[in-house]
Amino acid sequence: MKKRRSLLKSIYFCWLLLGLFIVLFVAGFFSASKEVLFVSIFVLFIFLYYSLTKLKCPSCAKSDNLLTFSRALIQPVYCRFCGQLIDIKRGVSNEKN
Ligand SMILES: [Zn+2]
Image (cartoon, rainbow, N blue to C red):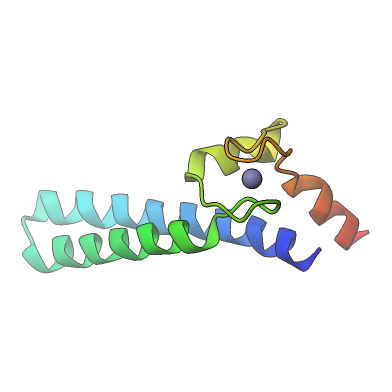
C-alpha cells in the first residue's frame, strides 16, 4: 500500500522536475546565461535519475517512462513487462479513505 502512494508522489515529483527543467532551460536560453543552462541540465539529470529509480511497476519493479505512469492516473494501463495493471489510483484512494 505504501509503495503505491509513493509511486503517485514520484509521478508528481517527476513532472515538477521536468517543468523546472523546461522553465530553467527556456530562461537560460533567452537570457544566454550559461549558469542557468547548466542548472537546467543538472535538473534534467536529477529527473532522469529519479524517474529511473522511482518510477517502477508495483508488480515486477521494472522501470518505465513517466508518460506510461501518467496515463495510469487517468486510464487503465498495463505494464509492458509483466502485463499487470498498474493500479496507482485505487491504491491511493484505499489509503486515504
Ligand atoms: Zn510490471
